[in-house]
Amino acid sequence: MKKIGLLIVMLFSLLSCSNDDSDNKATESYHGKWVLTRMGSGNPAANSIDVMEWEESYTFNSNNTFSKTRKRDGKITTIAGTYIMTKTADQTQFELNYTAQSDIIGSCTSNVKENLYIIDTIGNLYSSWSICDGPLLVYEKKR
Image (cartoon, rainbow, N blue to C red; front, side):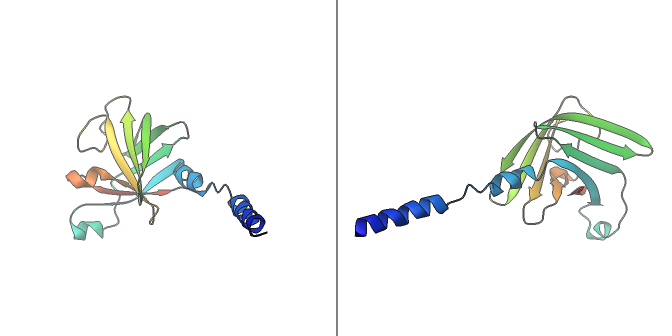
């Protein structure tokens, strides 16, 4: 009788485990349009100034393609490419690979690659350009 009871408990515990897709939903939450909302520099005084030198957005598609658009001085530039997403314990990281060089690519190391990341607890998208004297760029997902 104890064996049957144990078997029922084990069977119940296996059946009660759901197929929770919350991990998949979390990784899919980056798909869509991200809009530049804050811009700053290494100077704390400059970070407090709410002046945007340009408008900018990224659009991430589910087929691992993306586009980046910047509007500056009335001129709109759009470039595109593919991305690789990597998930760590607390970040979602992106390596963007562009199809051509452009002056709107913010990168420390390459003219056709760019790195971005989402701090999962905050939910904003950040450019890694600031680690090599580029501006601090913060993007929020458009709903």
